[in-house]
Amino acid sequence: MSASVSNHPLHVACIMDGNGRWARRRGLPRTDGHTAGEEALAEVVRSAAARQVGWLTAFGFSTENWVRPRTEVRHILSLHRKLFSRTEEMNRNNARTRWIGRPFSDKGARTPVLVQKAITKAIADTSGNTGLSVTIAFDYGSRAELVRASRLAMSQGVVTPSSIQANLYDPEMPPVDLLVRTSGEARISNFMLWQIKGAHIYFTERPWPDFNRQEFDQAIASLTGSPA
Ligand code: IPE
Ligand code: IPE
Ligand code: MG
Image 1: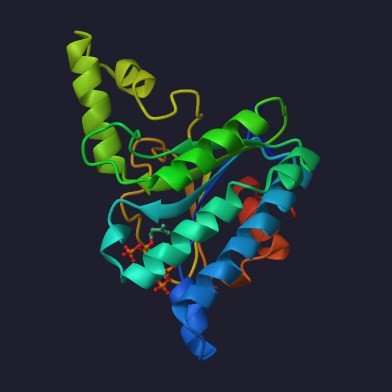
Image 2: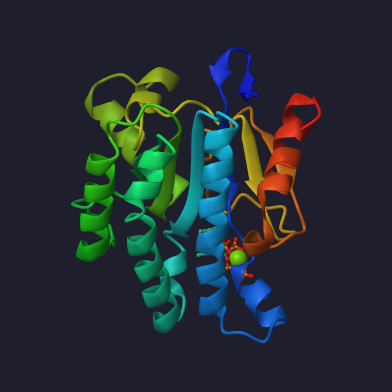
C-alpha cells in the first residue's frame, strides 16, 4: 500500500525521545540507549520505504542538546557519522539522505567537521535515488531556522509566508502530515514549528528504541483512519 494524503506523498516526522530512559530501565548507560535508538531509526527507514512514504524526517540532535555531558555528546556524534554512512542500505531502499540544521558556516553553528563530511558525502552518494527522502535534523532548532529565514526574506525585500518558506533550511521539504513523539512527552521541543502547521500528532508512551514497524504502521493508520 502506498501511504499518501490528498495526493501528495506522506511526510512523517519523528521526535525520537526516550533513549536515556530506555537504557536506565535496563541498568545500561545512556549511550547504549542512543545506540539502540539508531537501530530503531534504521528499521523505521526500511518501513517507511516499504510503505512508500515520501518524506521521513528525524530529530537527531537539537541546538539545545549541546549542553549534555561530553561523553554522551561524543557518542551521539559518532552514531551520526555511522548513520550517515549507511549508504548501501539507503541505496537498497532507493532513499535519499538530506539534512537540516544550522548551515556549517553560519555563526553559532556547531556541527563538527567529521560529521559535516559524513553529511556531505551521504547526500552526494544517495542523490540519485528517487524514492523516500530521509532528512536528519542535526544541530537543528526551529527558532534559529525561522530567525535566519526571516532575515534572508527581509534582505530580499519581501516577507511573506512563501518568502519565508523559500528561505528555510530545506525549502523543498513539504509540510509535515504526521508528527510522532515517543516516550510520553507531549512537547514539540523546538522542532519544525513552521513545517508542522497542520500536522496530525501521534504521541506514544513507548521509548524510541522500542518504536518498531508495527507502531509506525499504527501511527500512519491514526492519520488516514484506515487499517494499517
Ligand atoms: C532522545 O533521547 C535522543 C536525543 C535527544 C539525542 P533522550 O536522550 O532525550 O532520552 P531521555 O529523554 O533522556 O529518556
Ligand atoms: C528532543 O528531545 C530532541 C531530539 C529528539 C533530538 P529532548 O529530550 O532533547 O527534548 P526535551 O529536552 O525533553 O524537550
Ligand atoms: Mg529526551
